[in-house]
Length: 113
Length: 113
Image (cartoon, rainbow over all chains, first blue to last red):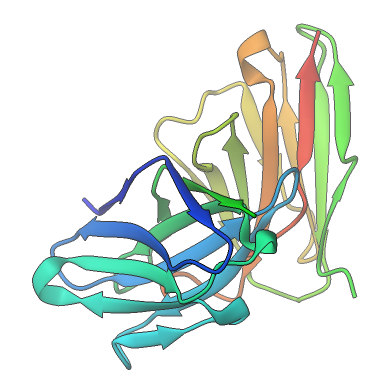
């Protein structure tokens, strides 16, 4: 069964600092991988996704993630944090084929001035 | 430009009084999902429709039912809400399963008194 683990329920950074949110997956074959962002009292919005093409995926708002099969990881990064990046971030996995999403527990990103 | 619409945004009901949440989409997507999200937790899939085919998650309580009368609309019925059902309910749509992006509505926050 597929699963995803997000290390750290909260990550705090200063404005302008590097953002790194960690995600590791467990799946029998390399799956599809997603990062979604959720602002308070809103639905989720797709940041980026990996679907077995390029391993380095660029998304919206300056975020990117790299699929590393050897490490079973799909960490999310952004070179310079903005205050507006403060939100909850969910990593999700879907098995190749016809499958629904399994979400990680989420990481709350806090950005201080 | 609204794509996935959920009404109402906030719903208050009484313990044991049936309640219906609604979702509509303008994307003409085949798949519609209902998720339950409790505070500081990941979204939990309750069920999804692929066209008219209903797919219930194994651990979704019988108290939760769904209807999809046409492509555009989907309803979540909670037959006898308990205090533990207070949560944010998210509707999402996608063209298909697997690698397809899910588009989320803003959610309905349910309060049970």
